[in-house]
Length: 535
Image 1 (cartoon, rainbow, N blue to C red):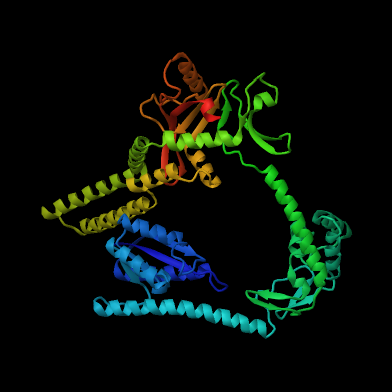
Image 2 (cartoon, helix red, strand yellow; image 1 turned 180 degrees about the vertical axis):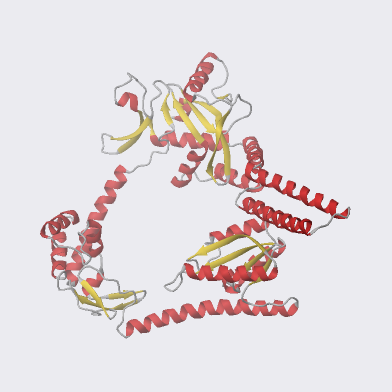
């Protein structure tokens, strides 16, 4: 029987990786007693037992269980699997449907109705314990604070920590008011740090003061003597180093400076989604983003040919308005490219690639070794049936049987590490990309990153190349600039429609995986659109 181990420890001061090691050691011992062959281990670190969705290793375990990669899961105790009773029941039901049995290394649960009752009781106790523990911890912290002792009393500039209390640092406390006053009067954190460095003023650890440390100090309300922990606020908890008035004035100054930075950031940090993908059709230089002001002071954003901007190519390509061009590329991608027919084709292509990738040479090599071992076992069995049996024969048979089990376990371990998706999952992803909200900046960026390979703009036309193929091809790498010129020339010489599909030039020699759910070959599938239709 092949099995896996699931181990978890929660976030907390007394939770360490050593607890994981102990869980795995006990689970391995249990597996040895039961004759279970452990092929993999799943570990979630610093994750609450209530947080089923946030446990990456647990979610992978459930996916691998659906693929029937193993027969059972061993956990240290029932609360390692989870402390939310409803989610725990659902997960166990899913495992049971997959034919996977759950074993508990440190808790004996008998088969039959009694075992079901006992297991249910233990799940309830685990959930109760989790809630009770949270209440006890919170209550204990509150009582500790109210008795005059701090939680997490970390040293900071100006204070020392003694018996879980802040006391002024005689060497540094006098400089706190100076820092606050100088900042309020208009000096920057960098200027203050530079002056302190020149004067030899250091932190308690002997390090120079950094601007980020100064900003942290300016926001630290502890310097007013107020101690805050959760919803507990206790004034005059320790000796103050800064007056309330000076602290509030510093907060106003910080807020004003932050608003100024935010405005500058909004002005300067406009994201041009087509950067690195957009090229000038005339000189083949990259198109870069830039901004300019209108007559009434409004800001406009454009894509401009870098060759023309730097006057190195003599190019006269005009500029494109950023918003209009990006909206057009997204619109064309969603409505003209991701059609039902293309989605069906992509699903077929992705499934085929997964099948091709499934032919892993390492796994194939192990499968060949397994066949060879099984053949040797069969030969020995034939010899035994013919009456040839010696101590050497027995030892060799035992050796080969162990080798067979080892190879089988290695094959399953290799298969577990491979992720694949079915047609419904792929269709859901592709249709969500086609029907998604193009006004959402993150979605628009993701759509372009996944599907768009290159874009070439001309006076009249725009040629867009996508990250999938329409079939055929000679298997060579392709020159997108040359293909774009070819498409435009063919269109100019034709009397057909204003939009044509660029013929495939064959698959690229490498596979890319832009996102987990979409695996496509980088090859030519393009669409040519009238520039007037783009704007």
